[in-house]
Image (cartoon, rainbow, N blue to C red):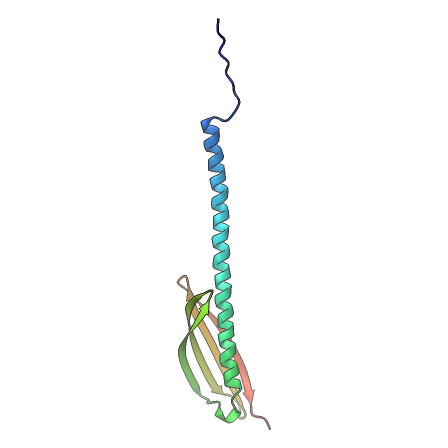
Length: 131
C-alpha cells in the first residue's frame, strides 16, 4: 500500500496573486506621492523665478533718478526664463502712477500659467524725490 503525502509547504497561486496585488497597490501609492512632489516642486520653482523677475524689474526702475521715472506709465511685455531646464513664459505688467507731489508708485505684476492655471505675483513700491 502506498501512502500519498500532501506536502503543504510553499505558496498557492492564489496567495501569490494576493501578495502581488498588495505590492502593486503600495507601489502605485508611492508613485502618486512622487508625482505630487514633482508638481509642488515645479510650482515653487515657477513662483521663485517670478519673484526674481519682479525684483529685477523693480530694481531697474528704482535705480533711475526720480525725474526719469515716468508716471503715469503702463507697460506690458513677456519674458522667457529658464526654469528646471526648460523655457517658461512670464507676462509682466508695470504700472507707474504719480501720487502726491514728490511721490510715485511703481506696481509690477508677473503672471504665468502652469497646468492650465494662472498664477500671479505682485510687488509695489513708493519712490519719493529726495529733498
